[in-house]
Length: 423
Image (cartoon, rainbow, N blue to C red; front, side, top):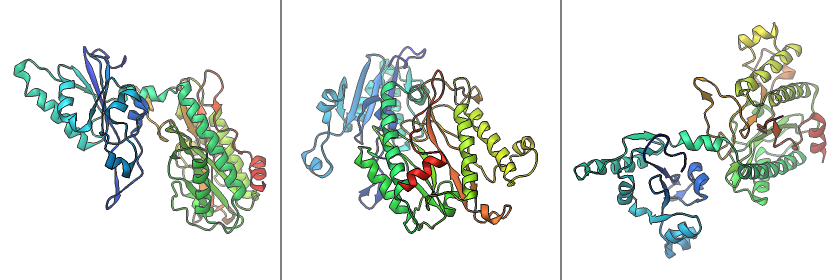
């Protein structure tokens, strides 16, 4: 509320809930609340709208009414009384009153904070309220003449994690550690990838996580070289690697972890060489995740280590500096090294400020996830290297001192991985 003015004499913010999406016929996809709305309210029901008014410093929530019949089908609702008693709202209305009340709340307000373009159906409701106010101009009523994206304030707030935020993230990371460790011990030749996926999801839910933070990637053998492999349907074979990119969501905060390990419990010579190269790159990038540095610095650290290592292994030839300048490493390492992490797995927050990469500050959380992927059909290397895919990913908190790895307890060195696989 304190940040809403920003030079305006009066301002209002409107934040709608996430829409409900139909899966097929009358069956809905599992519902998850809009992260911005949940961040401000802790309210997870659909068909709701939060309005913050700077003029009277009030929070108003529009939401579904109590309905005994619908609650038998869909579960309990807070209702207008619960919005105030359970969620601390100053005022509440049933959602059907939004059309008339929204225009009233906007009256004589200079600035509107609203994320236009995200939900075109709701855009129409906001624009209709504005048009209604224009029609009252002869009564001396004014309307917002400035519109600002709510993310300008809210996403900057979400980028910097509070102690409460970090407590949720640490718990998500602890649950994710348990899931990855169990997967390492359970995986064996002849199992299907979906069996490991089921183990991950069961572990998440058993420890209180609401859901997976994103669709789990469980890729064995050549599937480990597919960055966003999702079918998780293949039968694992002896001698292959299994790449698992999976994390849970706890209290609406995500973890995002990747580990790669041998299905047959021990690495082959080539697998170990690639794995240790990726690990060296990741450690270099984590060390670069410090105040004043940028995500670009972390990426550059991984690129340098990987390029030099590929030359040493004979998979690239030439001077590393020129190979980096020519992006000759990209057939092996084609993605960036990290992203913001928080309520969304690819979290909000500007990556560039003033056209330049943003400098890291304490309280930011990001992933560090370099990888090397050698496709089964990539004939520019000897056959023994083909079909090897390795990615290693951890969740890193920027501090005033050394970076803090929130997921460092998940087995990661070759020795730790092989011990976990043999458990």
